[in-house]
Image (tube, rainbow, N blue to C red):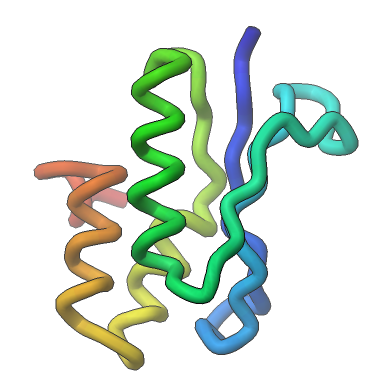
Length: 95
């Protein structure tokens, strides 16, 4: 099964963060996992751990993962960098 994950927030405004939602590819109403805490960095950590458990090759990412992490620089540059490196590794600057 292939999963698709998105960060829910109003783009360019990290204060509107509403968590990470994972659905099955092709059916956005089939939510299989949700990561929503008070701390987006912790949600990224939990999501990455979950992704490793199901196999990274089985999880697709919305562009919102990178957009949110970059927007989050306004809140915490360090946390933003950690989010990007967790999901994108050395490829975080690729577009």
